[in-house]
Length: 201
Ligand SMILES: [Zn+2]
Image (tube, rainbow, N blue to C red; front, side, top):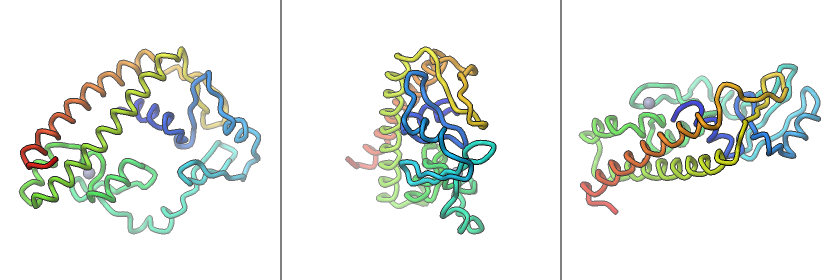
């Protein structure tokens, strides 16, 4: 998924971006108002239990587990990328497959791994991929619906100010979303194809 889609994705999930957050113009949340009124040094926890601290330059996340285990952060077994536990997709993918999200979703990678994977492991990975793709498609379709109603997008910049998102119009994001939906549906077909070859339901 493109960066813009990740932003939309995060927005749909109600997540904060690092260190900014994003809201559509018509939807100024109570949380944003509360956050605006908070003092430097104050903290709050978001829905995912992630802690955020207000600083003079905006909101920064307070790593809880990360700081303790940073030295021994695991790496993707395929591309060797260090797994950033702030990245929800990567950390979820890693916990299931010991791969980063990109590698897990990459069919070429999976095909390469087939030689070393036992049948049930292949089925497991493909099913995980299928779950990811399905939930991503669902998010994208929700994003598309939400975008239909938007004329402009607003975000909180790193200084805590409200700003119009001028870089991209909802129209442009909509095109990206539609392209990703098409891609996602193709990937889903591929995965189902692989699964049926492995004789799995
Ligand atoms: Zn990787």
